[in-house]
Length: 392
Ligand SMILES: Nc1ncnc2c1ncn2[C@@H]1O[C@H](COP(=O)(O)OS(=O)(=O)O)[C@@H](OP(=O)(O)O)[C@H]1O
Image (cartoon, rainbow, N blue to C red):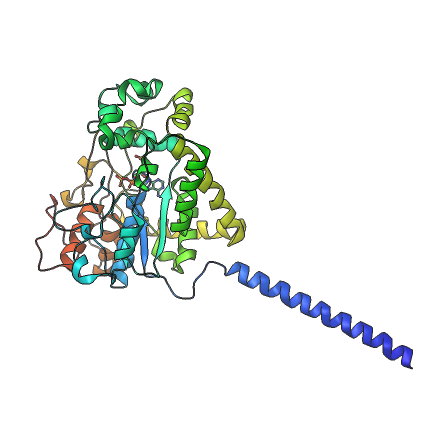
């Protein structure tokens, strides 16, 4: 009998251990899946708007979210359209900073990042994120957009000629006028885009950026980025649905030779290393959080919702040339050789649909000017060529 009892004891103990072990695995899985997703939608957000990285599309997402939740934006003061770029950001570049202090919710205009000063404006609970693009396609985009502004670009015939011998056209003494031509992202993050590329320096900068930013998105995987953003901020799918803004007509996209593509990795080696690092961490994060299978499902849901909205809102199924935009107030800002595309809305939409659709296609300058007027009705409106009425 006592032998039987002992046998039972040993097995019941085993059973107990087994049950506990299963419980631990279950809880670990549960916390793993919910690792990133906060229980409430985050409303304090700082987005470093890097150049030519699809950042205007993200800005539109943030503007719509700000309106939906009646949030306060840290907008550029006075008639400015950016937060002091290319100077390093200072808190006083934000409209109302002296009286409003840290009571802003969203900051997303172009700036050259400066964490100490940003912290004076944004609450301590703020989530910081930004976006990086493959430096090869970024260079081509920047060349077209800044062709007549950047001295290094002005002096060369096209992007291939420039990259064949960049030092012929690039003059270090023209410093900030040339930032669009070399390590553009490195500069936007607040660092010296002409710095010597040494292992120690690069690792130190990457560690600093990693410390300041909780999330780094990739232009090249934009929809995957939107899923990760939604999860990190605890937002809804509809909050990150978008129409592509600031895209170019096919005829203003230059084809780069294989040599040019390779050259960018050397000429912009700081950006190349930055991009490579955050490309690795992006996919690691996906694996550690939602996983590839769920990511695919959510990307599909996002694309389906985007298609649905495009059919509801747009006259044409693709972005169109500026000359074809019927409402001139909805023309995007044009620059350099780039022919920046826009949209026409369908006619006779119901009021609520019109409100939604109009916001999705409103170019950044017009949208910002509108929000500035809403937030500071007593101040002089920002003088965009087109002042838009997209109000209630
Ligand atoms: N959703 C999405 N996915 C991928 N790429 C996208 C997306 N939205 C915009 N874009 C491309 O981003 C480029 C414009 O970037 P920005 O809006 O950051 O430009 S700007 O610095 O504010 O002028 C511009 O790139 P280029 O067309 O190569 O110039 C846009 O086409």
